[in-house]
Length: 71
Image: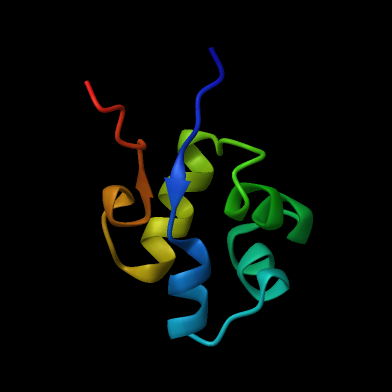
C-alpha cells in the first residue's frame, strides 16, 4: 500500500511569497523535490519535513497530514 501525505506547502509558500526555487534553496534541496512533495508524488524525509516546518515557524503537523481514512 502506497503512503500518501497531504501537505500545505503551496499555501505557506504563497503566504510568504516564496517560489518553489526560493524554498528549495533555503532548505537545501532541488526545486523538483519541492514540486514533487507539493503534488504528492514524493513523501519527504523527516529531515526535509522538519526543515520546511522550521523555516515557516510552525509544527510539522501544520504542514503535513495523513489523509482521512474513513476508518
